[in-house]
Length: 349
Image 1: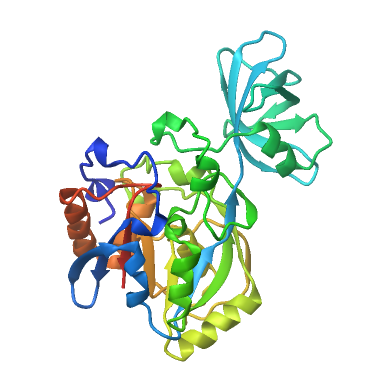
Image 2 (image 1 turned 60 degrees about the vertical axis):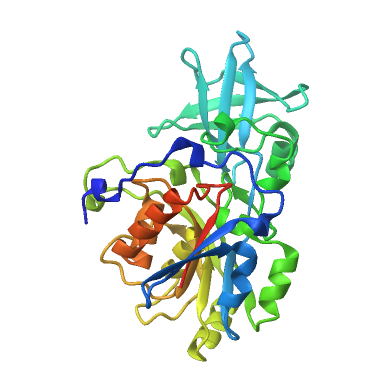
């Protein structure tokens, strides 16, 4: 199970969802019961029937920022594209950039806003060993306010070749989104609506936030033959001591911890002791969940369908039971479930 080919499967291209459904909770839901070894089919709006009084619904409240940048090289006018990855206390941004020819330190890029107007320049400061650049935005505005003016929603390349629709500004954001910093949505959270959350809460379920800013590493495939040789990307996450304590109390009273998405799983498991008690956590996590990992903090997982040979698919198979999740994916493909960010969902209980 250490061989990456063990996590491969054939996915027909037409099953990759290009648009979300008009009604988020109308997405299909494949339900995997690990104890019974069964697979059922329904819709996301059926979720309340799978919850129990005392359960904790843990969601990622990260907010996708308009991280895709379009511009031109100020001196030559050549086309340039970039992706905002983060910023430092000294005001410098970290970006990935793409253009013809070689960009030199000191050169500037003139950003172009989505409405076609000229934005502020970026001064290219230095290129780092990993291929990213440190750049100085020549603007007095705060980082996220500046991005709101010049950036675009960073739609993944498998959705319409990365071309943003105006509706993506809301479609590619969860109802939980509060803390800006992600360059990709925690997609399991995209299925929730306020009415659905009210139904779930009426069952005696309490909601709890944590944060994991999804980074560019989430799209990187495993490029080595053996999982044990894969270097996992790091992402910044946090869960407060108050939230951790409340979840602990509910779990000790018999409630289950239900993670909305693999991003929530990474923070919960990073914050858990060997005995399964949660503690406050803040910082980078490079946790790679693969066999024979023993889950300590998560009892139920809601997740979308993931890429073959990806760290997320490995995580889901580790959580759900290898043979059962393989069977579930075969069923999803046979019944033409919609895959990836705007696709359908799987609940593993």
